[in-house]
Image (cartoon, rainbow, N blue to C red; front, side, top):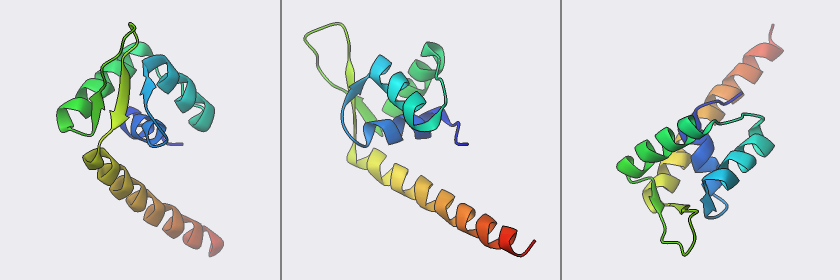
Length: 96
């Protein structure tokens, strides 16, 4: 199970802009992981500082976030690496 908050947030934002609570709901739906608000916003801060996501202007109190091109590349690299590990593990399990 993937539990890295940053990776989960990037994956959530890969299909569109979301505010914090929507990210929490989406992550729980697709991964089963429940991100707490402190974990979520700590990870959002790190992702913003890395330039992987950006906050959007909003007319209401909820601030939506968007995946940047740099964030998309980071997500692609991370998932590609995970894919290699999964394929290797599955291949090796067949020989056990």
